[in-house]
Length: 308
Image (cartoon, helix red, strand yellow):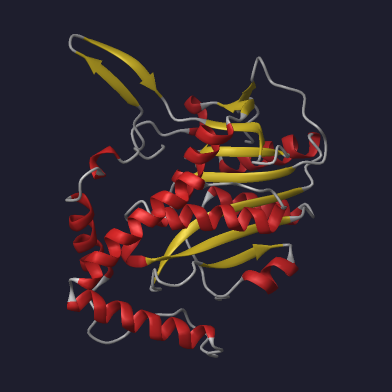
């Protein structure tokens, strides 16, 4: 039986919304290599100060035991209960151009009802286009630009910016379902999968969030400054570069990945992903070594907590 109760509440101070705005979707959850979407949502909320239009109901969509909210313990009492948020908001880019933003956690339940609701809200708001981003780990070097795989109904974007076009089956996310349903409805939609270096997949890699912003700019024309992210990325790359320089094993790994990446981008006709072979360290070993190094550096203990 279809779920009929509302999945959201309209925000009491919701501002008026112009028709024909682009919709940007950023859902944290299953595929978030490098913390790309988590950091992207933080950027939108902290730097752009979006105005909520519709607030989705956690008690309906969220598995609290899988993604437990944070609460503060203050000596002898509890305060500051912080449940995750999933909201459809009105935001403005760096130049003041408005857009719609669906951001927060990936729903655990009622995906079809959620997708139907988002499509209905988008139709009511006369959304002009839909763009979403997520990030997956790939055996690519951090010394090269982050590539993308583009899906959806915008063939021009896929032709220009999709560097890897696999034929495969993957575990779906709510974002995939939204894209699938929007495409069925004939909407103008694009999904960008960021191809993040696998050995940095479990870190907060600022370049991944910057690549997400660049992808959104390409698809929508919106402009995002991201100055803080750029500074974070410079500092992060300095630390990674120092670690690689001091390790013969990591240096060989990086050189191997660079050679394979450059060969692939030069026109390799291989129909499979860029997968390394030989005696290179595993992704887990590389990630663990880099993680130990980054954790030992001053100032790393104040890294932002990830969103639910």
